[in-house]
Image (cartoon, rainbow, N blue to C red; front, side, top):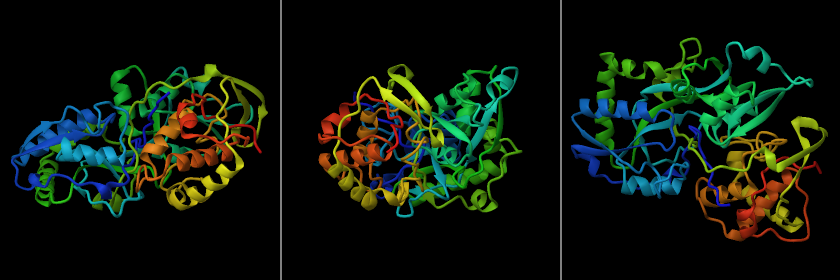
Length: 424
């Protein structure tokens, strides 16, 4: 199964490796620009509306790319390599680019406008007649929190206490996990909540602050090197739209509720320095819970011993040792020395490999990792090195070594969900 997973929850979520971007500088003096939005973004309709108003105010004609930011016209998220290709081929400016003060991207060559929407990640729970029955903790005192895999919501969720995790592949499914009772709470990108309520007007949620430095984000216009004049015209137009109230009218329904719009004055006023790492976008369907047998008692951290009906691919001890070395060199700066998460999500424990019901397959994770990681140089490792790194991730998440080496083909073709295995 060839599954490409979304890197960024708005992401997703988060474009790393932007230093490799080279874009058309023709937009410096052009009276027309091509506009892209982020793939799968729940705020895409807003982003287009703001882009039309801004560029019209700036006296610039706008055309919207039909392909979006990707290399093959699908809608499954974005890698740094795809971003570079798309900006060269399809776009002069990106509307709805997420920025955060804690995202790692100081070496980015992208240029950014003022922010037009201060938003971020929030904690939601079901409101109404069904809330009382669904918001009850388990006998052990733990509640289930939904989060979007490989996005800031996963990074925020893992900081929560007394929790198990329901990892979803899109922000829409993360909201849906609360609406359908799979989780008592969710950490999710607020525009996804707005979009969900548009589609399900009968559904209501209690929205609260997500206490985390990773929660505060802004949407901006992004473009490549040599587009200073274009960004100045965009900024001038945003200032005019803000002063006459038109920007507030456009974004009113998407803005954070006044009671939780508590980002720092510095973040709101100066807009952050670096691009986001994570985006959201739908992925192909992954095997669900019906491929699992769950047995045994819960272990520490919410883990349960599990056995898959489809065996995980084998890997050996030497691969684990080499994979650990590769991880320290290329991954630890973002994912943490002990895989605990830093500016990128945790790669260990229930936030990465749940006790059961994972929507992420080993093959999908391998495919995503081998084409998008490391963030500063995607695809730089050999097939053998990516296989060794995958062996290290499997081992640290409870899978045992064997006598057969893990090959890239075996890793990529594995349809086994990544669930926490028996602890070593």
